[in-house]
View 1 (cartoon, helix red, strand yellow):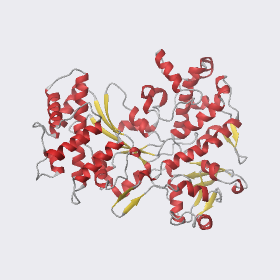
View 2 (spheres, rainbow, N blue to C red):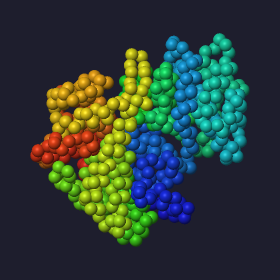
View 3 (cartoon, rainbow, N blue to C red):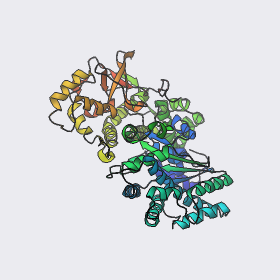
View 4 (tube, rainbow, N blue to C red):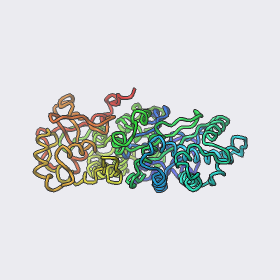
Amino acid sequence: MQPNKSNEDIDLLKIIFKEDEPLGPTHIEDNVRFVDELLIKENLPFKRLYQNPHFLVGRKGSGKSSLLYSAYLDDRSISLELPSSEVFKQVILLINENVDEYTTVEQVESIWSFAIWASIAARIIKYAKEKEYDSEQVKILIKFADGLNINVYDPPFIIIFNALNYIKENKQSKLSFELAARYSSFNNITTSDVEIAVGRILKQFDIELRVLVDSMEEYKLNTFGAMPAISGFIRFIGQFKSFSSNVYIQCALPTEVYFPIIEKISSNPAKDFSRIELVQWTARELLYLAARRLSVFIKLKAPDVYSKNIAPIENLEGRKFSKPFWALILPESIENGLGVKEGSEAYIVRHTQLSPRHIILYFNEIVRRGIKYVLAGERIPKEIVINAIKDSENRLCDDVFAGWLSNYSFEAVDYKYHGYPHAKDLCRTLLLYLPHKFRFNDFEKIYKKYVKNSLTNIADAEDAIKLLTELGIVGKVVDSGHRSDRYITAEFEYALPAHLIYSYNSEFCLHPAFIGTFGSKENYPDPPFAIYPIGSDPEESDYRNFGG
C-alpha cells in the first residue's frame, strides 16, 4: 500500500479489501484510483505496454482491460475511451448501410479514421477548456466540431455516430459515403487539419493522448453483415499513424476471437497485427501480484502482524518478496488428492490457466476460509487450501467456458464462427471417461462411444480435440519424467503465442482444474502423477521465449 494515504482513501481501501474478498476484486476498471494497490507494475505484460502495441491480446481474465486503463494514469497522458458496445453496433450498421459490395477495406478504414479523429478533436477541445487554454489550434478544432454539429461533451461513440450520420445526411448526392468522409471539409477544416492541430496542442502541453478501445468481447460482433465495418476498424487500429507522435491507439482484443479475425477477417494480418502484445503471465508474476494485494489487506486489518512479519520484506520486489511472503501464509507443502506431495504455491498455480482472475479467485477463497490464521500471523492449514481449490475449480471452468460462448459469433465470406457454446456439455459427457493421460486413438474410441450420438453439433473426434485444446482443457505432454515419475509436464494453448501443435501420435493430458470438476476417481492414474502445465512452477524460468 502506498504511503501517505488520506483517511478517506484508507476507508475506501477497507471496502475494496474486505474479509470475503481479501485480495480485492478481479477487475480494477471501477477502482483505478487504487491502481497501485490492485495492479503490480513489476511484470512483463505491464512493461511491454510502453512499446505502444496497437493490440493487447489475451484470454478472458488475463487482465488486458485492466492493463489498458491503468497504464497511463499519470500527468503526461490523457485518454479517450471507446467502450460503448451498443453504439458500436449502431456505427457498424450505419457504415454498412452506406457502402456497397465494391467498397474496399481501405475505404472503410478511412471512414473509421474520419469518425475517430472527430472524437479526438472533441476530447482535445474539452481538455483545452479544462485548462482554460486558447490558441489558433484550438479554434481550428472548434470550427471543425461546429461544422459537424458535434457536442464535445457527448460520449465518444455518440460523437462518432453523429459525425458519420452528419456525413450521410449532408454529403453531395454524387459523392460516395467513403469519399465524403475522407475529403469533405467542415467550416473549411479537414481531418488532416485536425490531426496537425491536435499534435501541436499535445506538444504544447508535453502530453500524450491514448485512444483506448476496450475489449471487443463487449461488442456485438454477430451484428448481421458487420464484417466490412469490423475489417476496416481492425485495419485502422493496426495501421494507425498520425502526424503527431503523441497520439496512440490501443485495443484490448480477446484471444477467443483473435485467431478467427487474423485467419479469416483481417485483409492483411501481417500489417494489421504487426504491433501486438500477448498478455500472458508467469507463476512468479501471479504470485507476486497476489502477495502484494494480500499484504494491503493485512496492513489494513492486522497492522501489528504486518509490522512484525511483512514490513521487514516490504521493499523487496518480485520473487524476493513473494517467496518469503507466502512462506508466512501457506503450508510448506501439500499432499494432493492423488497422494502426491508438492509445494503449496505450485499446487495452486497449476490449477489456474495462468491468469490474474484465476489466481485472485483461488486466493480470495483460501484466505477467506483461513482468515483467522492470516490475521493472527499463522500459516493456513493445508486442508483449507486443498478444499478451497476443490470447491472453486468449477467457477474457474465456468469462466473459461464463458470466454468462448456464442456471443462471439460472426460470419465472413465462406466462413462461420460461432464460438463453443457446447463446450461444457462436451466436458460433462466426455471427461468422465477420459484417463488423465491418453493418446488420440483412445480419445476417439471414448468419443465415439459416449459423445458421437449425444452432441450432434460437434462433427467428430478431431473437432472435439480441437475444441478442448483451444480452451486449454486438454494439453500435450512434453515430459513424463523430468521431475520424477510422479509428475508430468504439459503444454497448454493458453501459454503459447499460437495454436497448440499436435499430431495423432501426441500424448495428451487433462488440465488439473477440469479433472477436479469433470473427471472421475475411477480414472485416476496408478501409480499417481500430478500434471504441471508449463509456466505454473514459480522456480522455473520464464516460458515466454517469443517476441524478444
